[in-house]
Image (cartoon, rainbow, N blue to C red):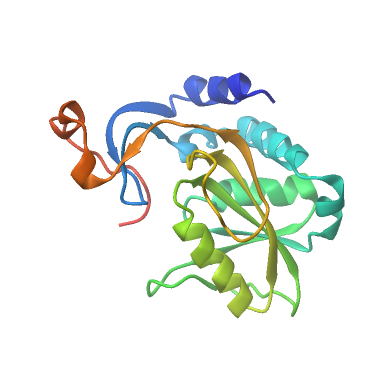
Length: 192
């Protein structure tokens, strides 16, 4: 899938939003990609996951034992990546603020894990999720995401394979352009 084809999927789903958004990273943006909305259609979610799976080198795909994703954002794309790769897919939750496997999910000691996210901006959630997999006995050998919003700067400590790089500018709270600061802010993400 080309970048334009991926963006077409977001536009068709009404999932490319414009306004003033507070991202889960704490940064502000004039654009928001609502991955839950683009993934609500099973056929579209399947297409995007298969395109993302194709971004992974064949030798990496052969090493993956399981797919793990952080809840909430990574749930759907993580499940679809599990299907695309024919691997079990599980998710991490934060019932007390720290990611952990629950609901009977377990990783065998040394399991090689593909971490799957919807959007990566600063990589904070990804690094927290990668640390949680290590605590659970697994090893994250790579991460895949629908969208990289880091402008190619994120360092997750593992190889990173995004379906698309989106370079919509993001701003720290104290560096907001005047027009953006004057626009009411919306926090559409899943993290409080």
